[in-house]
Image (cartoon, rainbow over all chains, first blue to last red; front, side, top):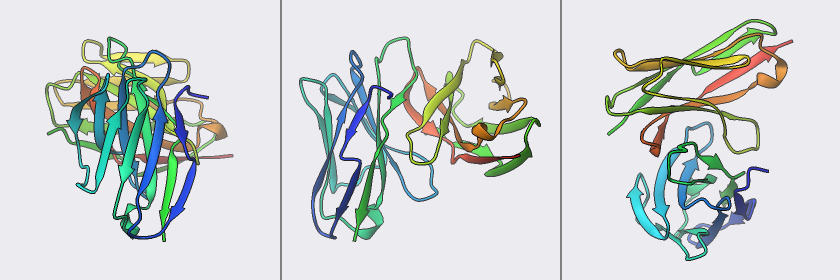
Length: 113
Length: 111
């Protein structure tokens, strides 16, 4: 157990629908990063939050949004889902200080049918 | 922005042999270079990292080397074992922010 909790582990939904993925970072970690991993693809950076504030955006579609709450958990909202959104979605957390390494959760596998 | 290339994309070695994976990066300001191992159905796990003020770092059977001038870094695994079979990702970043990952190397260790 990495200490980063992602729910749900699996999600199957239809095109056009909206889903919410949840991430609870390791205790004490202020930064949350979201990454998308499509089949046989690398890890594509989506968005970064630090202590409730958005810090950076990567290749995140306008149909996707995220937020980090006061208790530091984060949610990634995906709307108007398309078949191509099927992927593994990972969150990672880090303290944001001198310890640079990310700790990843086990991911949410999203299947859009 | 930063761009990270990684080679080879697949690598098969016999158990006990060494494996080397190489990455190059484009942003000369990048100063932190981690390596992650991803096993099937799991999230990536940090296995070793190196900062730009160090040329080499070793942890048991794994080592990472960094050449800042050439902007490349490599992962070396010695005495490979079947449990080393996984996908390995390199990454580059400035001060641990917004990692840019390479496309990954699928390592197979054949018994």
